[in-house]
Amino acid sequence: MPATIIIGTQWGDEGKGKVTDWLANDMDMIVRYQGGHNAGHTVIAEGHELKLHLLPSGILRPHITSVIASGLVIDPKALIAELDQIKEIGISDPNLIISSNAHLIMPYHRLLDQAAEFKLGKSKIGTTGLGIGPCYTDKASRVGLRVQDLLDMKIFREKLEVALDFKNQVLTKIYGMEPVEIDAVMDEYSVYADRLKGMIGDTSRVINEALDAGKNVLLEGAQGTMLDIDHGTYPFVTSSSPIAGGACIGTGISPIRVKRIIGIVKAYTTRVGSGPFPTEQENDTGEAMRSVGGEFGTTTGRPRRCGWLDGVILKYAVRLNGLTEIALTKLDVLSPFETIKIAVGYKHDGVVYEHMPNHQTVFHKCTPIYEEMEGWQADISGVTSFEKLPKQARAYVERIQEIAGVPIAMISVGPNRTQTMLR
Ligand code: IMP
Image (cartoon, rainbow, N blue to C red):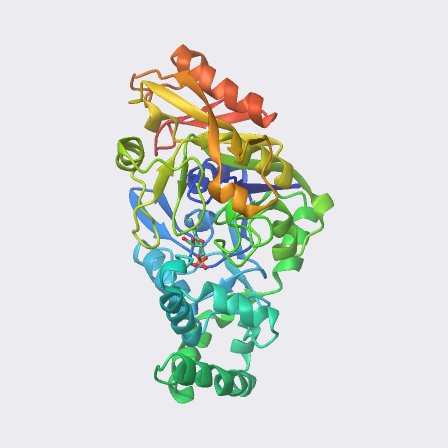
């Protein structure tokens, strides 16, 4: 069976969790392929509402094997806190495999993330402060500690000594902070090792064998296309590759094993953290989107910046990810508006851009060219079929589909499973 990928097409928080949850019934395995606990989604199951960051969305369903693949950076403390959360609702032995190759977020990564942001002042990236960037930095510099190092605490200590020798100089001499004590880290991570040991495995093999056996495998992206380190709004990006190509790298499967790539498009746009956002509405419109859409970060609680849907970004996401279909989320949030806008291009210095400008200064400074559409101003949260949507809402969906050039296969009009329509 080929694999399916779920991707965020904007700056994250598109509602990937809900779509993953919708597809989960048909899945045998759900795999996280990049990022760390900077991601966040709320999972509602059996009357329980859980906020998960690292655990894949299928973790509450016994028939699904959950995999945390090699492309992740894992804070074991955060992972164990989530395992404790699901234990409280009766899942004490989850069907979870953690890649031995995934990297470990260490206490100094968190400290360095926060100190670097503080030092940047007004130019800060607005990271989640959880140590994601510094951990990926160490991975690329080949001085990181990996999950498999938890299997031999002697080797773990040797690697930690080398790392701390340098990190403590940076912490004390550059940032004027206290050094990290090796014995304290060893004590802490030995406890984590005991707890996680039994879940560590060769996830590339596990995923490939599942595909060989004809199982349905879902590769679940975190963050979104515009936060991709190579293709996003650098430097205001995360440190991993959320796009479809990243799914193969992060899991260790071949691109030819992927058939479906579902892009999640929120009916408007949001962003947390700093960086350019051409369609942002720093006014009553944006405020209305934030309050109706409940646009506050799951991980940090920060209010999200809000604005109109950006068709240029949409086309860019279709191209980068090779989307085969789109799931449109939160259409109901636009119900109060008399008119709805979609950006179909940008203007800068007298030049019109129909595609993502290759010079980011243009993206920073451009003015969006909007198309205006009539709003529907009716409650659509109980509508269960596309045909029953008000004609203005149908026209909006069809215009998005036309811009993307990809079918909109699913539309969501509320947080519950029932508030989903298929086309
Ligand atoms: P980091 O991933 O913590 O390094 O943060 C880098 C940028 O990515 C910041 O702008 C964060 O707000 C953003 N970011 C990271 N994870 C998410 C997410 O799950 N949703 C939305 N934005 C995110």
